[in-house]
Length: 265
Ligand SMILES: [Zn+2]
Ligand SMILES: [Zn+2]
Image (cartoon, rainbow, N blue to C red; front, side, top):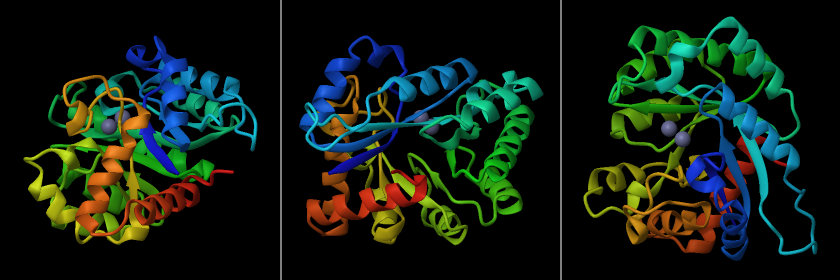
């Protein structure tokens, strides 16, 4: 039983077909899905979705995966973060089954918000996570140096995950030194991802999470198509191959890691 540790179920590409998406996730025997907030309106939508989702109950119906949420503002939208937005995130974060702050971080690839605003919003959300004693979901793209500097200055001792990991061995070592987890997404299955697979060999099994980041980044089998939580099994397969362990062993470890990191119950 796998947990998709990073999905965007509130994305329009998935809401159009959410019932089907969750049915297929149930068929793939997912235990849980963490749906991640990306901006203030999206974080509200996440809070609504997890409040409305029926609890997973043994023997009830088709055993749909449990849905947990995170609230935060992605670096793309960092420019909208104000004190009011932070207060609303804090309020939403107290809701039932909201298990983390994020995704937050830095994205110097697309630079959709000015870099100084990204950094301020990142630090503010790190502080929010600490205040609320919640783990942090970190996004870093073409910004690993700066992301790590900020984490090492502001987030020591704070649990979290560097999601959709795309760094080299040095970045991985610093993330692990911080005590954080490393989230592996679909790109691990791409033929060109030898570098990532090389790094993955050295990541301890007890610090790994698997994720889809759907609707984006479909694994090789569905590359270019809409991604969804059921496909996390292809990510897990690729990771198990790299780690030279069975699918079941990989599933057991990553599921336990996600339960512990996010305090799922
Ligand atoms: Zn991200
Ligand atoms: Zn994401």
